[in-house]
Length: 204
Image (cartoon, rainbow, N blue to C red):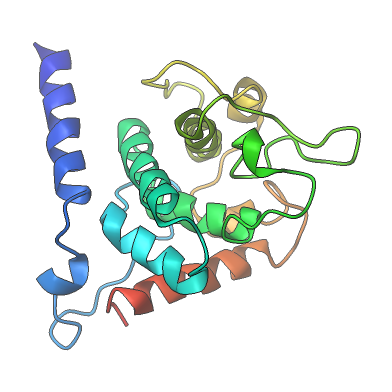
């Protein structure tokens, strides 16, 4: 019964988050001063449509069907593991250059966070489908954002999960600089994208 209640709660939340009603239509920025959380764990607040619309404003040449599909997966997978999917989506935008790729990782790898990408001999992990690639990204963030006693709900996909879960712990995007990435400005770049997302949905 407990598992059924949990699954029903997740399903209800997903239906709300993926609906076509955007957050900007529910809240007036003149009345409410709200912003997206910068925490690794927690709710992402926005809908898949909000995320996809923002993405297309930054890369209008992208395949719209694929963009809405990947946004939906980020909402679904993020909510399943309790990960802030808005942060994860922003990170995907940063890591892939809004799905333009162009570095070690290529589109067919379905690697949306540069997982394992180091050099020509180690171009990164590959995943069979878009959803599994998103799931691996979400699981990697969950490994950073939780202590070792917090277990995954979905089957483990991220091959680097166990090591990170034992050795790293951060709470906000600031902690990703020097841990997830060596770039000292990594968190600043994520912050800039999150600011743009907020602006696109009318939060600032």
